[in-house]
Length: 307
Image (cartoon, rainbow, N blue to C red):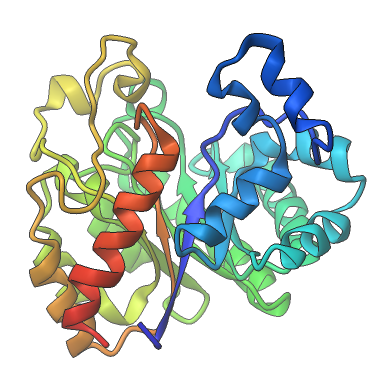
């Protein structure tokens, strides 16, 4: 799609090497596929080979990446040689609802914006507050405090060529009850929205109505599917439901769940969206297969709707 570039969220967890030159020796260590997922050289080539132009990073990747590459610029140059650029970074604005934490929250965000600028990324996708079980329920005063600091973060980001995109998750304190109100409390000139298609549905909001209502605020997408929608309070307000190790998958590759993604893309075309779309395959048992399935759906199914 000419108006969009496809990125992939880095969910590889640990990539211990920059580039493995003695690949055959690595393979013979245990004769499994593990050798194929040990270095950034191959990981980035997989991105390009499966139809991606970008990668979205996470702050918990930074120690490992900078330990291997030294600087953001070195990583960016290495990725560019393989046809990949950094589209953005995820950021958790923890405690943004606590007035006494204002300076700490603002400084943490500024540091990640400065870092992202050096990587060449354009989107800081940011989850406000913490998990519901740790911070909820939020009062209107809590929301106003969070909106205030996030407005400041958004202004700082824009001055550095970066857009802040609010990112709601189905188990976080900004949730079904208040996420539209919170979005409207923030400044539309400096705070935008990263629409995670599965998270919105899991919260119980209507994906199509939400996008159609707030299309002018949507700066980017986290595109993934789900087979679960409208989760009850005991799930959304529970302790870290995403990471309970019970084999349940909250998220599926686009087209493998039940979301009306083709109908959504008709609205995306109607509103003439342009920019980065990031695939998230978190929870997939085979990331390379998931990357390929997701890219195929984006290009061959959704691409026929919006060329």
